[in-house]
Length: 501
Ligand code: ADP
Image (tube, rainbow, N blue to C red; front, side, top):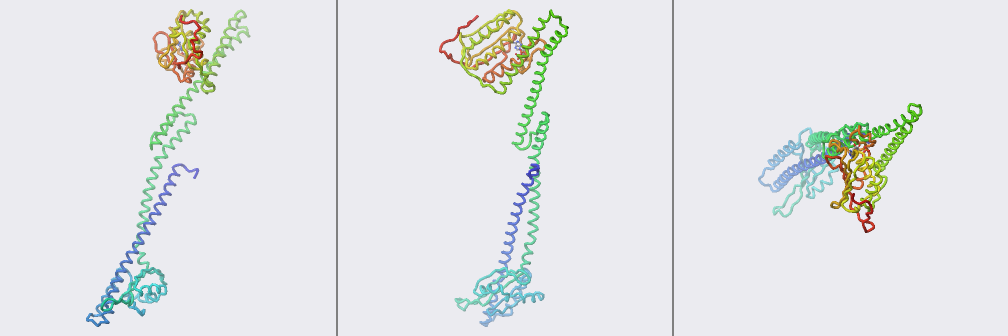
């Protein structure tokens, strides 16, 4: 059973249940019909026996009272009636008197002899004969030497002239071979069996159809899952069938789309990492080789060694970024929430970037609405976001440009913006700017970017359940993050820094 398909199982189980139900119902119907045929046959015979018993008692009374009723006419009538009983029910009739003497009024010749053997002398009937003699009506199935018989016994009685004393004079016995009754309901076996087979075949066809409806989409889904396991994420499951199956199909297809894009981004990621690692390694190797084999003259070694150092730094930065991203995605470290002054933190970051700012003669515009701006977040992680955004602003803004830092409360939140008037980000690139390794212009990223900075910012803000977005603007680029408002842990404004400039 375990190795059978779901379809076969459903079919076997349903058909077995249907088969048992049909068999039980047919059996019950047959038994009920059989009993009702026997009962009605016996009732009919009893009625006939009562008629004859009446006639028999009239006959004996009349013979006693010497009335003018012609006894032979009554006998003739009993004889005629017996014949009708024989013709209609295949049963023979006897009138038995108190002494055990019996009269067979009508019997076909070939039956007469058989009957002689079985009639009242049959020992198993003795008990019922006694009952009949006590005035009771008896219906019994008995076994005689040539098979089962149904016997009906109805006593015939005589009353005195006043009708006060009733004496049982004998009984009327009608006997019929059980086979003749059986023959009536034998036909029913076939009718019932035929009806049962019909019902079963119809139910089997319905079950077959329904089982197919249920299992076909599942089989198709299993096939699609198999293809997906082999890496084909285009495999689709049917979204049809019963409500739950169709829903399963839809969920399966959604899952396959997501797995497909996940697989695609995994491949892109590996390709990007390899690409990002290869270029610095290639240049380091090239310059080192050139210095070793003399292609680069000794007087230029210092210059090229600087390039080697820069490339090594870029490699180290890339690896650090990758590690950070992977740690965040695996949720390895939990956030260390604290209340801190965002303005103070931004001033520190600015001071640490003074060299680059001075090199490009950039103008820094600090627009802090309040002296101090307390937020509730992981200070190190938010500093990382600020550094990434500020570094980008510095990197992508030409000399003498302006970089603006803004902080202000807004509702429940603190808004921080980093804005520049540099290259800006084309609208077409905006939706992908936070993707890993995405760079707007591959050519201008000689600026030695890795394409991971904004992806890290996005992940950090997501972990804080806060927003980061690119504010659409025509001149330069502007990024905004939201932060949860914090409280001053020291109870006073902690601003000691540069203030507005
Ligand atoms: P990268 O290390 O390359 O700067 P990021 O993820 O920080 O990586 O940025 C992704 C890309 O977004 C950059 O390559 C750059 O093309 C673009 N970008 C980011 N910030 C700015 C900005 N302030 N001005 C113009 N372009 C930007």
